[in-house]
Picture 1 (cartoon, rainbow, N blue to C red):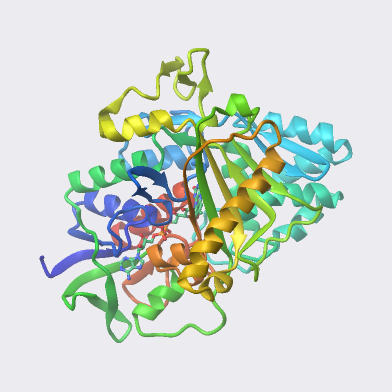
Picture 2: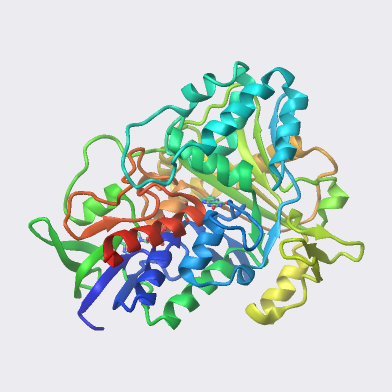
Length: 493
Ligand SMILES: Cc1cc2nc3c(=O)[nH]c(=O)nc-3n(C[C@H](O)[C@H](O)[C@H](O)COP(=O)(O)OP(=O)(O)OC[C@H]3O[C@@H](n4cnc5c(N)ncnc54)[C@H](O)[C@@H]3O)c2cc1C
């Protein structure tokens, strides 16, 4: 391997890949180092018992139709020179925020949510529209760091009904808050636009479509990717980073470094300890595939965010999983189903129709036949206690995984109602320990540090953060984080 690089990027999750492509496109000699055997990080995929599973993907947020100017999704397509159509996006049907006695529905047309608010909370509609205007006027993507402003407090100045506040917050907590029971106002604005104003889509065949596109683009531009190559330490000369030492003992040098592994984790690679407690907000996720269809079960919604009381408890838990709230996703409820069982998508006009079993171009035929039999997938996500899982013996861990899988499914059946499916074809579950093991995020903390570093600067001249702890989250956010940090620190001028 060459030993001197223009830029070394640590971590091939979404942000590392986004940064790598921008740098390679600009002709930089760039090396992307990934400790795991595949790319994607928190949004990767894996094969178990010959079945492909997506790790994190419920939804690609920020959906807008092609050629919409100035939106995160189309911006990232332009920056990476990846055609929008290549993502093969299918839109959500509709999603639901379910509380004990009331539900709000939303889809990719904001007026639908507004109408729902008007019907369910007639006295709140003026405040809701004022809140919407305030979000639109918030400069949420600026790279300057600012003090934490409580989104919950801000919402109280527009809305007087606490239940509506909780309902609006729930999806935003689950899709991007590193804080317990609150989030920063700018983060709220980003997520509100990404989820409510823009919306959800899913690439046909899931997150591997995105991963493959990104890796191909990166390599085509001349970038070098090394998998199963963990960085053991970052080599410093005063406040300058000069290179990295790999777990293999090899040393590599670079003019600049970008790290996507998190603030604490990057400081640890530099031999520094960060004071204070690391975040403990982590998730467990279950995936079950059934021999059934969503119609047969009467399950129409794409994503259901649920809370079993009037107040959301989005906070670290001591339990293995906290079933009081969660997210339920049915990936088959993307795209419109037609009478012959095929799917159509209205993403690009005119509407195109295709059968899932067809188009084996980007999957092996074995994969395709598997997918054809996976007719109903139920994904559930809950808050989960890192310590509770950590303290189990290996045998108890296996047993508890099985028990929690069953409990989570029962909880989902209760929320979704209808006719739950019977025959399980495949199932899997991951815990905070799985997340930590495969991404190195301390405590399996999904959204990293509560303090974000918007400009990527963490005290070194030429080592910068991108990704989760820079502050742009989710697939689209992380990609944009990598792009903007590469542009700002490595390519300006
Ligand atoms: C359960 C779950 C569900 C989610 N659902 C969604 C969703 O539906 N939609 C959405 O948009 N987002 C979702 N997300 C969030 C989204 O996945 C993340 O915000 C985003 O992927 C973060 O990307 P990143 O590049 O910042 O970090 P990461 O994905 O964490 O990438 C960091 C990479 O660095 C590597 N690494 C760590 N240490 C080292 C080292 N020492 N040497 C080399 N490599 C190293 C890791 O292996 C990893 O690949 C979900 C996340 C989870 C866990």
